[in-house]
Image (cartoon, rainbow, N blue to C red; front, side):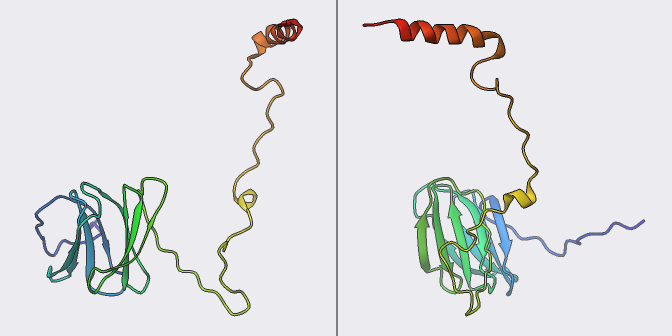
Length: 165
């Protein structure tokens, strides 16, 4: 039975170890993040388009994501910084800081009609009960006090209340 999958057609070499890579959804570009925190953009022919240095020395890339039209690349760093980068010239279109280490990025395309305009809270309702099973009720004795020491703790509390300064 023949093996199915991809066939290697070429091999390219890079100066530093690659940690992340992602192909453009529209054109012949691949973004590569290396161990130095740099992001390199290459064409399929391996022509280098540009290199983006990390904004903070020794910062590493935790996530890469293309905008669906392939014109913007989002780069997320371990430091919590996110940069939206123009793929034509590596200029930073927008940057933001989040409160933690970025380990993954994904670009979500959301469209709004005139009847349903954009909102800062596009998903205001909590529909987790539709997806997740209901949790079982907790036993009344559940908590920081174990069953064996419950009576003793009640007595200790009463003694503390009876003490006067």
